[in-house]
Image 1: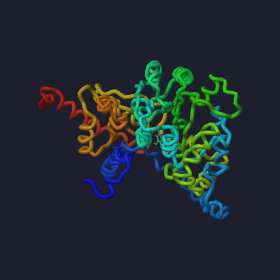
Image 2: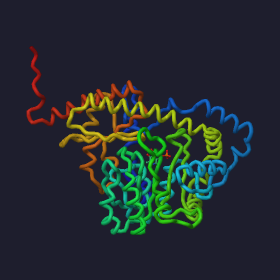
Image 3: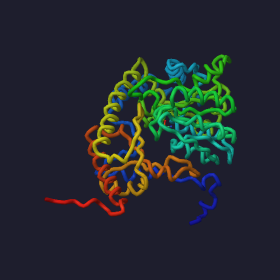
Image 4: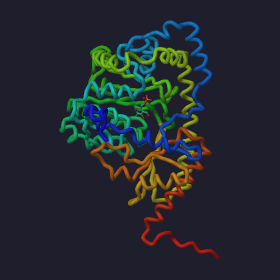
Length: 423
Ligand SMILES: Cc1ncc(COP(=O)(O)O)c(C=O)c1O
């Protein structure tokens, strides 16, 4: 229905829809439902006492600063801390390479604002993070989707898509959302070289990099870019803009993320951020700094890794015990998600309706493909989150989901369920 307001909406607002996941979370919040749908960190591991102390300290010692407007670039000690922290992973950044954002989600929006003209193509993995598609689509992005497998984005398929001239590539190298996959070392090198050869920059989104449960840390693309291309322009960073966040290591309610980019890019993004929100909450940044300082963040990440590793393993074991053999899944080395492939002919949307009857929820895979994309492929997948439920709930939830899958499989068989004989 067109009202006085709706007829005035700008073109870019007309195509915007609420994220399928946000809508779905409303259903899954019913207390009887075990939800593997959201991408929520475990709230029981939030360092609540440390936050309380930090709030008090900030308010007692720096009230005027904490409650005042601040610099758009962010709270200087926090920018310094982030620069120091990422230097440990080889990312040679100085504070002037760091812009604090209101979550990585705002970083994605600002990048869309900075780089995308209506009709520009953005190269994404298939599947990819739904929130990035939402952020870029507002600016009129069109998508080139390149499939990924267990080793991440299939770089051997990139040449022809890169020739078609995307504005940039958006890539999640570590424990991808939703696929749980990690881009292999070999493909990282290849990707960075291809980006250089075709002159197409990369947005490297890395919210989960620290949440690794097995294997060795792999080199970020932003570091390989410098090494491979022998960037020697001081601390300027080349073809890759790097994003990360405190949402998965401290608390998502903080709404604190950051962008690492060359100073000239940071300066333009800062101007764009001024129009969006002037700056990210000063109080929140100061509290996060107080919480994270003196090595606390590193210790806390160790705790999160222990808890999530146990939950991932509980889910993997439950899947093996409860799911029919026709169902396949990947083994993520970190992050929050497990990506499941359903048997031929099964539809994840229909399964979702059946799963809700059993009081268990997940996200159907088609949410994670661009609108022009592989809906058929998406319909055969589901994303399961393992961080937000304890092992007991995970076992019970997967038992219920296994039941729903078996019922759907029976319905798919031409003769219906196998007859049950009783002696
Ligand atoms: C890949 C990816 N990028 C960005 C975000 C947004 O994170 P933030 O809470 O920092 O806005 C998420 C959140 O789940 C994510 O999975």
